[in-house]
Image (cartoon, rainbow, N blue to C red; front, side, top):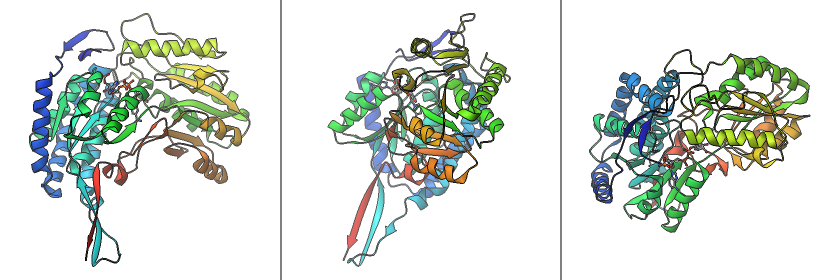
Length: 455
Ligand code: NAP
């Protein structure tokens, strides 16, 4: 994939970028290593001051950053504004809490004193996706830099201007030169880069093949990794649920980011007794959604980020139909306009045992399944290789307890939509990855947990 800005709403190539060559990459690694030697000695108050300043810049210039995101990957401008604000929040959250999260922890043993000390590792490589071009990076940057690490970003090739803007924000915030740098390189370069001994750990948010490739390269070098991969989150609605609210949230949860979110609800598992009504209400909501120019405030759904994503999604829908699925609405790309537009789509009657029902649909396509009871709902929710998030709707507290205990996922939200929050850990199990971002757990991923024992 070329490193370029191509407007997904029009297909227009706006700017091409020359990838960094080996000499340039080497110079950035040198600079990052030199920066780390000094930066690791800085105090929490100093780091907090810079991180707060980064939050200020994000807030003051949110319109510019939001425009850039919409231009490069097609999310609606209003959702891009919200994304920048959330980035400021995560910066402030770790600026405020890092010292407490990384304070020495004293433990009584046979020593005169013994304690756990958290120390930074060094250069951490972050390989990031385009779908939340600012948020994915800031949820790594804020804890990693507050812990005293330095970051190298390899962002997705279709959002180079976002990647460079983030580097600029960190620099303008006052962090020492080299503490955070962007590398403009293709994904194929990553495995080689990891063999450089100056890189101490890596995190990747993206697809399973990319995760496997990065983890394999890191495994060969015994380097710590965090992987945030795909998901096919269930959205379970049981008989006692507040149906109107569940349908409204089901629509938002599937359409989030034009349907391109790892934690979007993708499989709707509805108890038979309320399934007809749910289906009817969902259809009404889908028909009311406005597709179009992502810059316009009234637009609910913009284009998919690239022609490849559009083509893959279209192929998955065709496979669903060939496997017995019935399309209730949508089902074909919008060929009447340029850009990568795909309409809100609902598919029913697909056998949950079909191979396609177990795939992740990265676009505005909802798969609807009917189940007789909670046992079958949980069984179907877990019948996926993924385990990222799950949303479940019931007012019955015993059922809530069962859903919390029995669903195999990194997060379960009862009567609410799955979302990330700086205060709570975020991550998956099974093929959705491992490790956690955000919360206290997120800042503990890239540190040396050093045991100190003194007699
Ligand atoms: P992708 O192709 O895996 O791209 C993600 C990043 O990995 C990009 O920077 C990409 O660079 C790079 N990359 C690609 N191949 C690589 C390789 N072999 N080695 C190292 N890096 C490589 O993912 P995508 O399809 O754009 O993103 C969608 C996927 O990400 C979905 O599965 C989604 O669920 C997942 N996702 C997960 C989370 C989460 O938090 N769990 C969040 C968002 C998205 P290039 O652009 O240069 O190829």
